[in-house]
Length: 341
Image 1 (cartoon, rainbow, N blue to C red):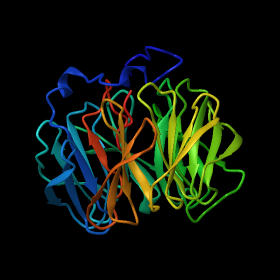
Image 2: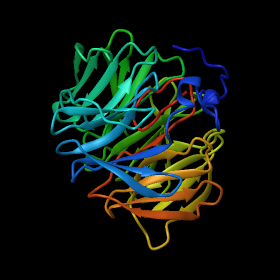
Image 3: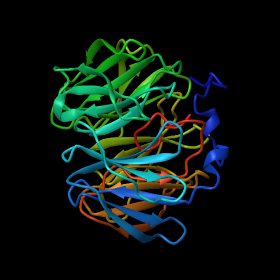
């Protein structure tokens, strides 16, 4: 794994405008996958206009950048396929078969892709060059396994299990399940969802939609320390480019909570005018805008990260989900909608 340059901030190499050389010529685009209409719409962030629409399959969940930042994968968990996009041009390639890919991550050394096969309760390791299977880890007690993040040293991954109210802690090198941990309250409808490690690696923040906030898991992933209430439907987690603020999308409340990621203190709450259903997305490369899908309103929200002001509401297809803002700063990507370090 590329060494961490700042132990106090694992995201130090993904600051505002810190684009890797290979990414600097990439065309700025926003890729919006839809879990109902089964396609990907592409938005020009300069004009806020939809410039392309690409059919993928049945239920497209996320658009995920590769570890080397050169490919974006639109993943269809019902259609058992992934559609790669050239990160430089935005052009789609040939469909790649994969088993129930709800989400997609990459090991910190870049040698393996991990397909989160939610429907199968499996984590499937693939060679990201050939897409041949390397290993299958069965997690039968983790219904709804979906989101993940890694410890700063890259040795341990923590996967949330939305329908089991717990997390699965996995040793990355051996590909073995170390343990499962139940949340203090096991919500099994829309329980633990997105997860992000704190900039200093001291804790993991786990969004629990049913609980309306964040569980705070200790850095070694051995116990839950406390709970932070943010709002109904707490779902997506994103850091400001300087990693001094954590943005939490409260999907059922139509709001964004802003936290201090080192202390967990709530700094502000931004409400989308007229309400909404902010779900998943990311920040622009310069960190000035936060783009989020409006899951139940068929729109995309563009918010100012300075004060939460709504810049634009863009109509899109049916049930937009894990949208990807490209390009992203950083040396490599761990997956999801752009977990770069």
